[in-house]
Image (cartoon, rainbow, N blue to C red):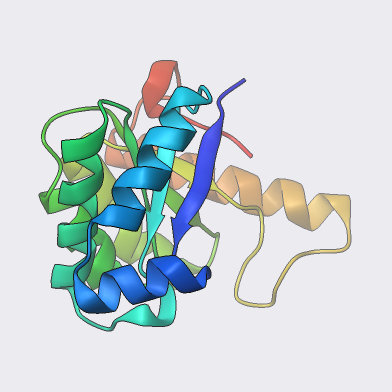
Length: 162
């Protein structure tokens, strides 16, 4: 089992404010609390707090400066993911959450592969979350194949399946 701390996310008011004001204090606080609680990865997400990819890079740098825990870069915007991955200091990383949507796969999987990051795949596509098992399996297989074709290994810390 892999535990991912999800509290460094602009969905929380204190993190939104911290991102907008470049105030590292709440981010460091939550990074340490989650790392101390045993998180294997810390998810970082600028969400709607910013449209600037540089803010994701700043967020990754702040978290890395606070704890040795690996990072999970979380965004639905490839340019934000790229900025977060570029700020990594060499520790293991994940990209969260990649769907089976062709446009997303084509943009995000190569970024993860280039950075040596794993993928958290979500078995949904442009039509949303499937209600039938067959389409979920199809979507999962599509994500799996895209990762394999990009050279992302399917075992160890560089491959996560959801």
